[in-house]
Amino acid sequence: MGEPLTAQCISPAFEMVGGLAGGAEVLDVACGPGALSVAAAELGARVTAVDVSEDMVARAAQRLARHPSCTATVMDAQVLEFGDATFDAAFSMFGVINLPDWGGALREMVRVTRPGGHGCISSWTDPRTVASVGLLVEAMAEVFPERETIPRPAGVLLAAEPDALREGLEGAGFRDVTVRAVQVVWEVPSVEGFLAELDQFYGFMPPYLGLTADERDRLTPALRAAAYRRAGSDGKLRATTTAHLAAGRV
Ligand SMILES: C[S@@+](CC[C@H](N)C(=O)[O-])C[C@H]1O[C@@H](n2cnc3c(N)ncnc32)[C@H](O)[C@@H]1O
Image 1 (cartoon, rainbow, N blue to C red):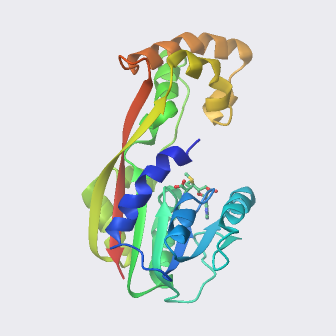
Image 2 (cartoon, rainbow, N blue to C red):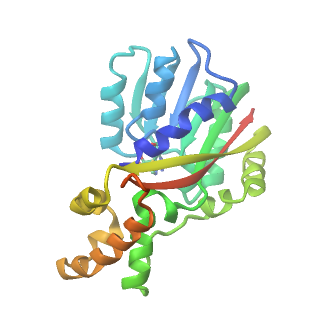
């Protein structure tokens, strides 16, 4: 569900670190199913993908299998099991910024990157507005206003402000930090198609998972209204969200 959105930030991230040379040692922290890792591998980089989730690592490893110099490993971003100055570039797309100790995880990225190498991270400016989540948040606020929907970790709140995000990277040890806003587009062919697959869109999201069947029925009209508010004249359901990418040099 997430990758079609987060993958829209991969090319800008590569640009922000000055591109990836063939043979570059690249670390993808909190790699998820491995979109950035695969893109880097296809450019000839030697990729090490890490994530705390065994399932994510299994999927990333499966996709990286045809690139023999690339690996995927279960690892906590806050305690990277690599020596100092191991990588030419370290990325964490929508990853370390979510962690309670996001500053510590950033310092780990700096530690394992060689002097002169680069790091790049990303965050949604407001995760409550991302794609189908935005519709759920709006509908929940209308029907169940007392319930919490999407919590925003401290790092994500900070990253909404470009200057604060830049200072966060500088505080971790990155230099020459740049921040860029990237517009990410979510598109579904039709509103009715979306409404027919609500369990697929929301079945894994805690605020929706916690609803009874009766409560889901009460929510559906509000979701329908939120969806039609975003429908274009072509009938497609569209939402645009801004991500902040930040990159720096070690
Ligand atoms: C929003 S996903 C981003 C996935 C991918 N980077 C992308 O852009 O599509 C966040 C990922 O962080 C991982 N994660 C959460 N806590 C972690 C930790 N302490 N160390 C490493 N990965 C972690 C999750 O398993 C999940 O795959």
